Image 1 (cartoon, one colour):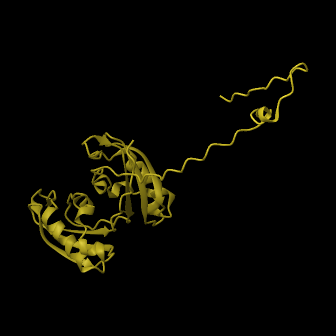
Image 2: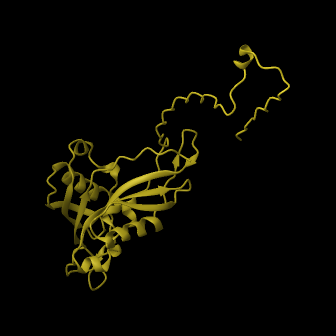
Image 3: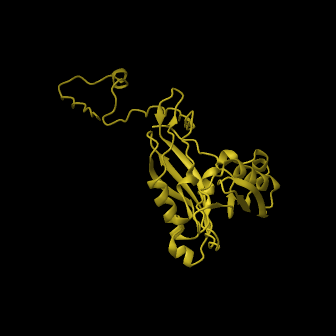
Length: 252
């Protein structure tokens, strides 16, 4: 509240003020000097959670999610996106940070990421669940046409790979690329052999791809017309994209 004080007028009968008294009477309407401006405080750098929200985002996407119109138009691309994850591990919002050049792929990415992932929540230094921001990229590669042969049912191979599998030396060297490979699958549904048929240009990424597929991939065995399990060959590709460093976020 601003308070204004008025000095009453002096009556004619009052004796005149001496010079000494006049010096002590402020002029009517005089503005007191402004207080010194306090020094500006430096903005505190946002502190990230002690443990970040985690989820294998690749496991939530399959070839069936590829927008049909994008397939008809032969459109591919990488979508960069940012997710706001709440303390319960659910995605509150999705924002495209780097467009693939296709609105269909951009929209499909955020539609999937908002509906499906459930994260292990981020926690602060006291172990309390807090919100977090997760940045990642999704590489849309046109599905290959199925080859004729005995029917087989395979998993989403991308679900076996996470950012933690990226070879540290390849990260230091800034190596990325797509590895094309063929898996020899036994009648028991395990990988008997892995052969790189389209190198990524990085021997580290090529070798890591076959190492992961041989150790982790499991299949429902292919069967012949009599229903007997048979060997099969699976052709696939894995796109290695350098992990994105998370941004610092101030917990709410």
